[in-house]
Length: 195
Image 1 (tube, helix red, strand yellow):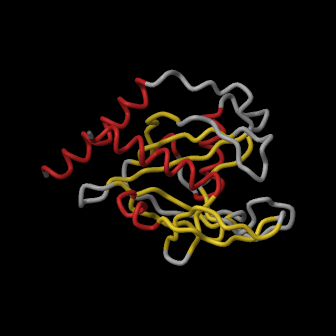
Image 2: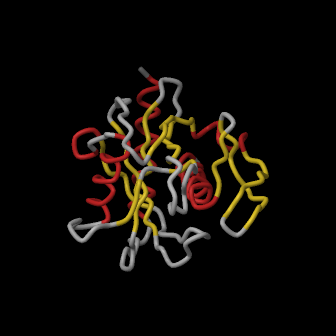
């Protein structure tokens, strides 16, 4: 029981740290990604990653990333877009199964530097049943505590040719680019909230 209390306080510290930061300006944000966290019984957090389907014209075809996508005109806010995209891609209803913790600084993927993307962090109440949509091949959980040990240089193919990039190597899958950057920002924030 004490582990659960420590974990809840870790999530609460993360929430407080996120809320104490200056408000994120989301003007100009065109896309969102959901950073979905669950509690593990061993006093750690896990985050949901997905492998995108191979699709012609998709700049992230086959990549490992976070659920998300473009904001539509019917979305009232980036948060609504995040809820919609997460439901479409992995079948999680964030309105019922999640709790908003906050958001990270918007960023720009290197392969689409004109696209401003807002990472939004949710805590899930329990491990949900995942139902991947047509844009996603698979979805899987990774312990945040294990990510630092998975850092390495990886060779990737891009539309501009091969590159060597900083990455996390997760069960034979390369996590790089924008996803790598926002995961590092989350790890830094988690470390600050713990100390």
